[in-house]
Each structure stands twice: as C-alpha cells, then as structure tokens.
Length: 103
Ligand SMILES: N=c1c2ncn([C@@H]3O[C@H](COP(=O)(O)OP(=O)(O)OP(=O)(O)O)[C@@H](O)[C@H]3O)c2ncn1[C@@H]1O[C@H](COP(=O)(O)O)[C@@H](O)[C@H]1O
Image: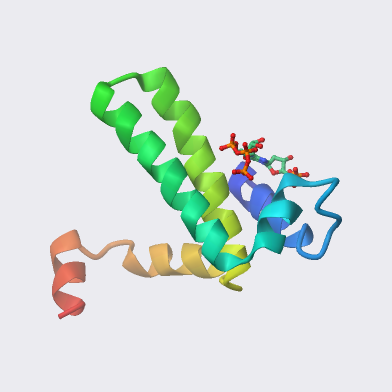
C-alpha cells in the first residue's frame, strides 16, 4: 500500500471518531461544506506558492491539498479507490480525447 492509500484508509477510519482526539474527525464532524471550504483554502495556498515559485513551500502545501482533498471526498462518501479507478480509466487516452468525451 502506498502513502496515499494508507492516508485514505486512516481518514475513512476517523469518521465518527472523537473530534477531540483527531483533526480529521473534527473536520468530518463539521460537515462536507466546511471540508470543501477548507480544501479551497488549502488549494489557494498552493496556488500562491506555485505562482511565487517557492518549491519547498509548494511541496508542503501540495501535501496539505492532498490531505484535505481526501477529507472532502470522505465527507461526501466518495471512495479514494473510485478516484483512482477514474484515473486508471483515463490512462492511455489522450487529454484531448478525454475533453471531447465530456462534450
Ligand atoms: N496529513 C495530515 C494533515 N495535513 C494537514 N493536517 C492538519 O490540518 C490543519 C490545517 O492547518 P490550519 O492551520 O489551516 O487549520 P487549523 O488552524 O488547525 O484549524 P482548522 O481550520 O482546520 O479548523 C492542521 O491542524 C494540520 O495538522 C493534517 N492532519 C492530519 N494528517 C494525516 O492524517 C492522519 C490522522 O490525523 P488525525 O485525524 O489528527 O489523527 C495523520 O497521521 C496524518 O497522516
């Protein structure tokens, strides 16, 4: 199992856990809208570092983005494995063909 799969498993296991003992449980208890808002904030922080060109900070913020993406997906009941399956479905197709298939 890679680090993303392990993280997804940890996050899914935090649903219903004590919010006092876990940051993930606290986020999930706030609901999907709050998790989405937090993901947006983290994405903006990554965008700012990408625009500035600070690669160390961008690396750090990218990790935050991935964690908060997974929390948001969990809050809406979307399995990480389903996201990976969607990426696998796209493998071998060109980005242009993928765009055309969306109409
Ligand atoms: N990868 C992360 C991770 N990345 C960021 N964060 C937390 O996300 C928060 C973001 O920081 P902010 O200052 O923006 O937010 P805040 O001031 O804490 O307050 P909020 O806005 O989030 O309420 C920090 O508290 C970070 O610790 C994370 N918390 C947990 N994980 C992973 O999730 C696992 C489970 O964590 P717990 O659920 O806390 O046990 C950990 O072992 C890690 O692997």
